[in-house]
Length: 410
Image 1 (cartoon, rainbow, N blue to C red):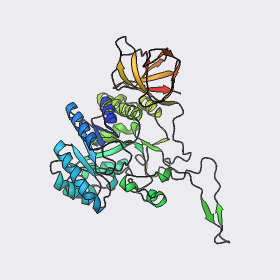
Image 2: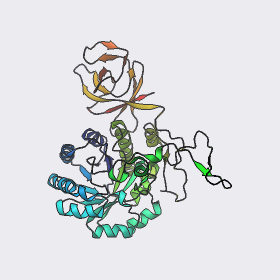
Image 3: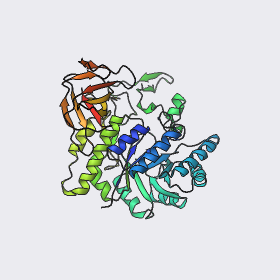
């Protein structure tokens, strides 16, 4: 079996480092105005740092310029493309045909990757993009496995194929949706989606015998989030996906936390490696246990196994995890063996923590026996995130490295 790329989201330079630490072969990122994530923490300087850091590790970076661009944006697009060309970024992700032409001119040495936002759902469309300079196509999430196999069989041989395996789904077709612009004046196609499909709605119907009189459609407490979808999770389908020859497996979540990136990347990294090493004994359950610890919505395979699947709506609207949360990040091991961490949620003596170890699917579980103030070295019982980069010292019964992530059991 050929090596399958694991591609992770990098909503900041720090998240890129976390993704690489936990096993990503490549990351994708982009600046807020041009990459469909208007709240990402990436500027041109972060792009430079991310690409240089990745290439030192022998890994890759794909930069997104995948908005549907107004004419007044093209000068900025060309300028950024020139920067990316000089950086030797490994690919530029594009949705808009006009942007494809502009990038081919401004960044002739960089591969063009067609974004999922372009709605590519057939090998005929793959051929079209290939003839127009694309080296990779990111397929639409709407495809089932039979359609994927057909594309892999008929696409140009040297066109690589990327697909999403985990993360948020969109009510729009491959993400192309005008609902947010219509309701909130924020265009999802320009990276400023208000996620209107996740809002609670009241539904009314007009009385048949009384035109103009609207009657509410009564629902129970779980029936108001009529658009909100579950999150995609194809951990159980990894064997089929690898066997059909998909080149790159993509995780969604540039705006998610470092904890999310670490957990999800580590789960899929170990899953891919375990399957490649011993395909006959692949068991997705242990990876799913880890993914459940970071999920904020229900999980679904969407249409991958069944075009008629209807189990992908999350009518509860729930967007939190009842059992686990981001505890902190390792900053350094002190000379006396204690560990300095940056906290992300309240920590107390006797809390149960889990250290997420790169390359190991089962975390190291331990209980906080003591906490020390990082400035005074005095023992404390509890620490709350009260300021930026709040730190604390604790004992961890495991050797650690800078950047490793800790989760807290609620």
